[in-house]
Length: 130
Image (cartoon, rainbow, N blue to C red):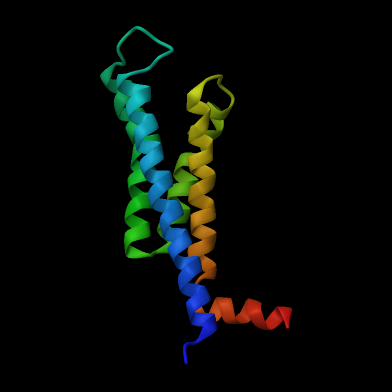
């Protein structure tokens, strides 16, 4: 007989991992478009801008992917916090780059899913409902 609470926790954990990986890959793809194939600008991006956007957009995405693989929810939360200011700023711009905010929110959802997927936390919340 399998423990239903453990199975449910594993499903929630898998969902958190998928949120982190997919959001991270999506954000990296958007960053590549932003820097190298920007449809809104014909001028090439300078080196300083590339480095700044890498640190603010791509690095948190890499951290989110890494944290998903090692299943450390606090690293996913750090990725969310690091990407929040620039993602919030880009949310106010017209065009496709407002989708950086969606990946930022997905980091937070991934964090919550990883956080609540721990066996004790799932059991606690299940017992509260009953």
